[in-house]
Length: 149
Image 1 (tube, rainbow, N blue to C red):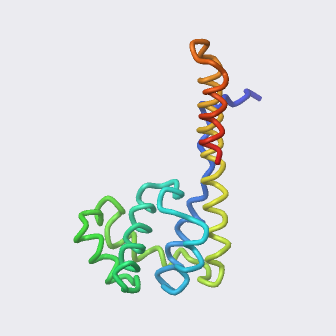
Image 2 (cartoon, rainbow, N blue to C red; image 1 turned 120 degrees about the vertical axis):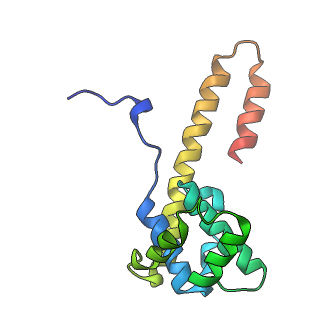
């Protein structure tokens, strides 16, 4: 068996959890309060899902609840509907959702995967800075510590 190098690995993600979370938010718009405790738009691995989540939040900030029609219209006005897969993809999100009752669990999975990707990015930065012998270790430690917290 040939060992897999790190460059051949896909960053941690769970596309099914992302789809289920978004679908759950369309089925139960009131679940957004739970999801907001765990994730931001940039926690999604797929940029299309981040676009959809951002539009759901934008609707919420306007005092509107997200459903297929309001979300599609919001994204159309923002010019992000096609980037997010179009109305057909958004409509399919609800059918990909086993249960809206598990939205908190889906959000926790997304958060976990995002944290893992951030740790990978941070470890790459640590490695890069550690090899840079033109910089004192004190500033390197300060920078890493600020990025961790």
